[in-house]
Amino acid sequence: MSLYSFFGCLFLAYGPILSIFFLYIARNAQYVLLMVSSAFFCLIALLISSVIWYLAKKTQSTHAVTIAYSVAIQEIFRWGFFRILSRAETGLNLVSRNPNSPFNRPVFGFVSGFGYALMSCLVSYISLLVESLGPGVKMCQSCPGLSLFFVSAINTTIFSLLHMAWMMVAFEGFSSYKTKSGMLQITWVIFSHYGASYATLFNASDIHLGCVYSALIGVVILAISCAWIAYGLKSRNYINRHTN
Image (tube, helix red, strand yellow):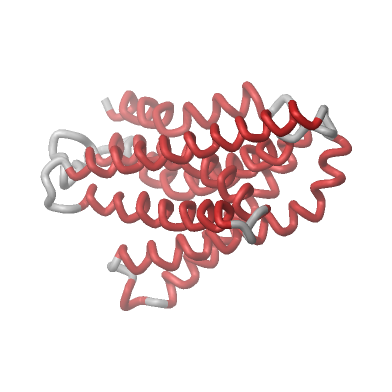
């Protein structure tokens, strides 16, 4: 039964992100390089968070504190990656399939978000996934009828999609940070990242069906982010049609 659980959680956690890779990103060498670069930035952010966690022994068991500085470091590196990418954006546009397309920046944001999503989800869930091979089963505290492996797999899927959405929204915000909408987008990414991360604390709480609330909060944040992205793409399409 543990083997069935392992593969079930494996495909649930990484199925969507692997599908996106093989169906879209793997076909373009430029996207693969951009994905690897973004994943490297995320890895550095996670490494710094791990070092802080190791040194701050008094707060190692306080997950709220760990989330506070981990999210902050990830967002700082998200901004740093955008700064580097913006310097190379002209060259990236030249070698892209559509050099003059107004949608290149959202595509770059999506691929960069994929790299962030891939690395963060691998680091956060892979050890727990291996534990699902047995011999025991860990049950979720807030949802005793579900295993922790299954609940964490759902959260991994949600966060993988969230990171891609956050990166696209953040890229738009960083590129127009002097405007009200740009600052609003940056603020949304930061606070929604904190909200989704702190919502995962419901899984280990005594709140009845806390794991359901955690997942719902993540889905709502994802829906709002996707609506924001759709509005931005629609606006770009409108501007493109009226300038050509």
